[in-house]
Image (cartoon, rainbow, N blue to C red; front, side, top):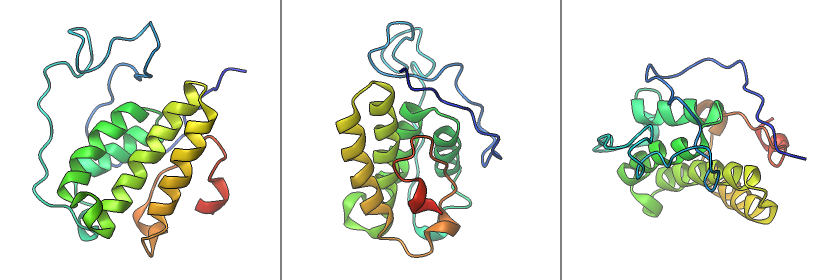
Length: 156
């Protein structure tokens, strides 16, 4: 059975428009967003975030856009948006950086699920949950939804 993404009726957290399509690697019908001249992000400048901490989550546009992308099934794009935030948060050297890395891993796990790679999806999900669990008060910070059921109970 083909994985299906049911677009949730969720609020938006940023003003940035969604790309015209969701990129899922190794699918012939969509150009690679960055490397193909027909890609939706071809030649786009990358966002720059000088610093990111837990205090910035509700005002950081690239973070909020990354959450919007994730919530609406743009997982490759969410990974790209959140990577800028992850760099600003200090990569793996800070709890905040590990938290953002966990979000990136969860986006990757959804891509694996849609690419019919369940072991990769489960592995990335476990790693992502492990990193999200480092942050206390995560329910106030995290506004993402989950479609696959792997971590449904963790969020509730």
